[in-house]
Length: 396
Image (tube, rainbow, N blue to C red; front, side):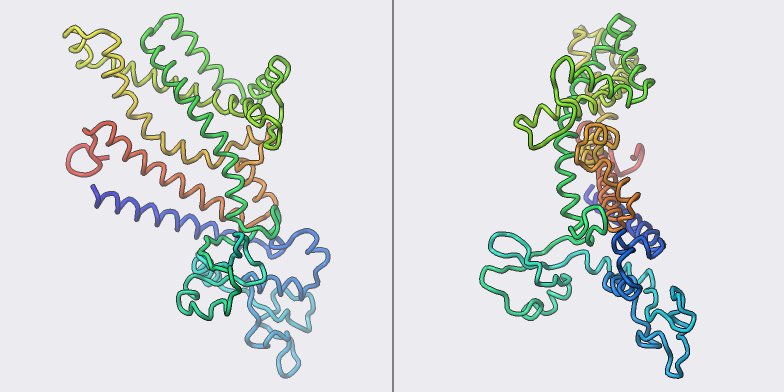
C-alpha cells in the first residue's frame, strides 16, 4: 500500500511538472508585445522594452556586440537583428533559450524574502532563491535590521496586467478563499440533498416522488444554466429581497452569498440525485439484497445498511476531486453575481495575456485535479475494504 501511494504521488508530480512545462513553453512562444501593458507599449522606447524583457529573463544582452548592436567594424550585428527596426544596427539583445528560462523558473520557484516585525515584506530588499540563500546565509541579504527576518515563499512571478506588480501566489490566495467559501457550502448542500433525494427515488421507484425527481434532473440538464440563474436571481430578489450581487463588505455578507450558493447547488444536486438513484437501483437488483430481505430485514435496514453503503462507493471516488476543485470556482456563477473569485480569473488572464498568472492558475488546477483523483481512490478503499489498489485480481 505504501509503495503504491509513493508510486502514485511520484506519477502525479511528474504529470504536474509536465503540464507546467508545456504551458510555460507555449506562453514563451507568444509575441514579445504580450509581456507589456498597453501603457508600456505606447510609452516605452525600444531600449526600455528590451531592458524589461532582460529583467524578466526573456532576453539577454548580445554577447557578440556586447549590447551595442554594432560590430567592431561598424556593421550591424547579425545575431541581434531579429527585432531591429533599423537595418544598420541590431537591438543589442537576443532571445534566451526557452529551456534556460524554464530552468530559471523552477530554480526560483522557492525564494527567500525579508519581512519586518509586522509581517509585511520589505520591498527594498531583493528576494533571493532558496538555493542561493542556503549556499550563503550570512551574506545573502547582507546585514538585516532588527526585527527583519527572511521567510521561505512560493514564487510564481508577478502579475503583468490584471493585478500588476502583485505576486501571483497572493492574487490566487485571495481569489481562492472567496471561491472556496461559496463552493464548499454549495457542495455540502448539494451532496446532502442529492444523496437523500436519490435514496428516496430509489426507495419509491416508479412512484410519484421518483417521477418528480427525474423530471427535476431532466429539467436542470436540459435548460441552459444562464436561464436558470436568471430565474433564481429574479425570484430571490423580488420575493425574498436577497441582494443580486455578491458583496463581502455588506452589513450581512451571508445574504449576498445565498443566490450564488443556490445556483451552484442546483446542478450538483441533480447530478448526485441521478447517480445515487442509478447506483442504488443497480444494487437493489442484486442477489445479496434479495437474500437480506428473505432473512427478514426491514426495507429501511436493507436500504441504509447495505444498499446505500455500496452505492455510495462510486460517488465517493469523485468527492475529494469535487472538494479540491472548489478552489477553481464557477465561471458562470461568479460572473453572473460579480463574485471576485477564481472562476473568471483564468479566462481574464488569458484574454489579457497575463502569462505569469496563467501559469500559476494552470499549476493550481493541475495539482488539485490530479490530487483529487488520487485521494478518491484512497477514499474508496476506506469505505469498501474489498477494493484493493494493488495486488492480483481486481486491481484499480
